[in-house]
Image (cartoon, helix red, strand yellow):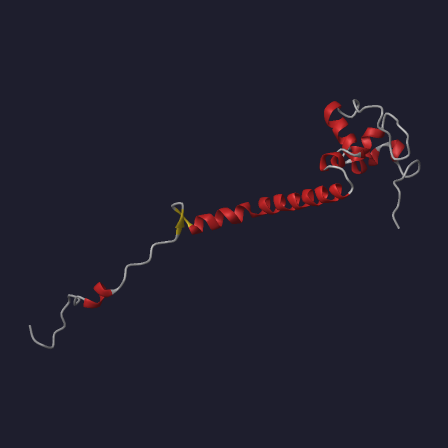
Length: 138
């Protein structure tokens, strides 16, 4: 072999031995941080919802305390009594002692608490604009 020929074998690099090994990935409880981050991103909407609900409940508790009542009493006030009556006995099993805002009670009064009453009742003959219309706000 002459001195002008190039060797086909790579020369060993003595500098590789001095390089540190890659740092281990950070973990918590043995789970990589990237997994925790992905989990938190997926749970964020639900956690935000729960935080807002808790904030609302704390505000209700604070306001009820200022009036000398409890949050439970405030939640079961007028609308709450209607919803509890509907939940326990259905729309036809609401206690007859519950009245509407004008002090009246008919067989259809509990239907005011049906969630889709405005959209659902649009096709009823009794609820057409010629015979009945919802109040208009300015």
